[in-house]
Length: 262
Image (cartoon, rainbow, N blue to C red; front, side):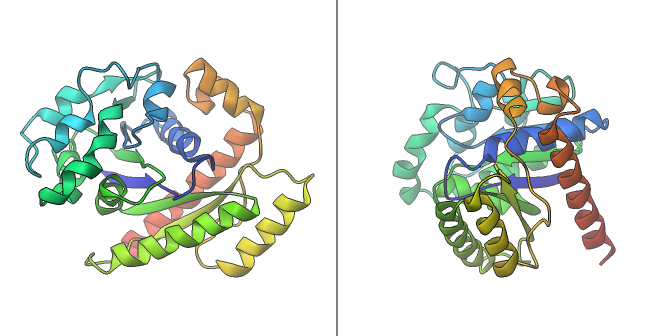
């Protein structure tokens, strides 16, 4: 199984949309995909028609065992989605309480990595949607991941958020055996605005090694897909946004292949 995390320390940058779009395209290609919602707001969980405020069980249950994960628990928590090849490890608002509980417990940073190990034979890919705050949940996402996708809205304040994310990644990498590779993805690009154009130039100048050279355009069809609870490619496979995400997926898979060969 390949594990990708989608993260940024700024909200509203297209994080959940990116995670679901990539998962949908992988599933369209015949892959078995598990999506993991680690954001207490539960945007991914809500996207697929489940209410994070009323779920009796969620991935919060994974964190209740002193850093261990009982055998079979991740499988029990899986929920269906609109795509037959995508399963969801759902979020709940209870995840927001983890930060208060975690100082007294050791091993909580590896809970999701341990949980995905139990699902290793059942899925080809895992895509993790992480919260926009640095804490035990983001640490879990990064610790479990083999590649990080950082969506960055093409406007100036989002670039500031990217700098915080890159600093966080440098900190996390000091405790990893191998540095976590990452790809920066410009999102919500509007070629009619000077803000989008200048931000894209800034990203290309500042992060040439890690930046995906293209961008995800603003596309109302992505919002319509969310409203319908379907992956963007299920909803409108020919939309501008889906065409862009298809190109991004091709880029990420090529990077994955190159890393395996190396």
